[in-house]
Amino acid sequence: MLNLERLRTLHAVSTTGSVRGAAEALHVTTSAVSQQLSRLEREVGQRLLERQGRGIRLTDVGDLLAEHAARLLQQVELVETDLADHRGAVTGTLSVAAFATAARGLLPPVLHALRQRYPALSVRLLELEPVESIAQLRHADIDIAVVQDWPEQPLAVPEGISCAPVLEDVLDVALPVHHPLAGRAATSFEELRDEDWVGWPSAEICHGWLENTLRRNGIERRIVHTASEHSTQLALVAAGLGAAIIPRLGRGTTPAGVRFVPLLPEPRRRVFALWRNSSTNRPACRAALRALHDAAQPGVGDRQQPPGQSSWGGIEEE
Image (cartoon, rainbow, N blue to C red; front, side):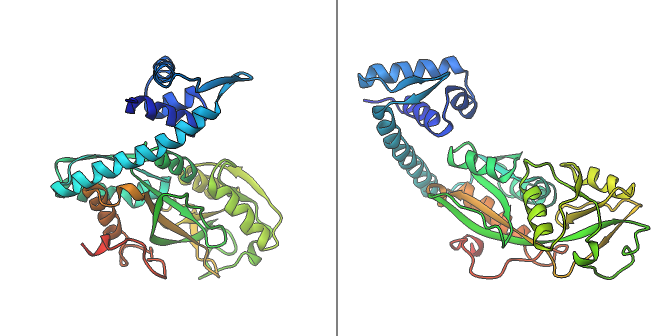
């Protein structure tokens, strides 16, 4: 009989590509991963790993067993979900990841509502970029990921992952208070052609969006300053060092030296909730998704629900 935890370890090595990555994903030491893999090799009676340069890779047998392990772990999660659904109790632990502005502007009331309604449920929030949160969702390190994309750059949702739209978020241009366009009711990228820009670091998804947006509008890329925090971006704008595109979700107080001006046409990003198909019927997951859906209803700030058919699967109607 193969040991489930050892199969879980092999699956982690397969998905992360290294012993160190598996150790980080499983929150154990690298030596613990190596021990589990050695024991699994003795159980199977064949080598599962081999050296490749300074790293390792799975053998053909290792790949085959890792594929079976992935299916088995999905089945285990389905069994656990069905048992929890049978009990009907919203209990246990739940991990939710969200990008920065959603973690600040959307998730706090969701977590508060869950704490009030389900005191036996423990919810953990992590601030992660979409690419990282999707990876952790696939590895079952988190249960729900709140991610973003743009209509012109749609998100690729992996197989086995469910996706539902949460809201659409409008972005405005932030200008220094004495800028000639700061008093306008609206402006356009055409009128901002000669500006220096304050943007996001190149590793963040928003950086690519800003570069592509400027390019589509015929603007030479002039992203002079970068910062992850919107408060830092706005401080640079207030100092007269450039313009920035800032979302309305989680925006906070406007600094005295900054004016927000709507853009025409309005840039919009889309916010989605992702979860594994195998956890759809888990009561805790359904409760959190329902709270997230409720928190994003129209009438709260300038957020708008996205058009089209919902993929919530009836969760929002419970």
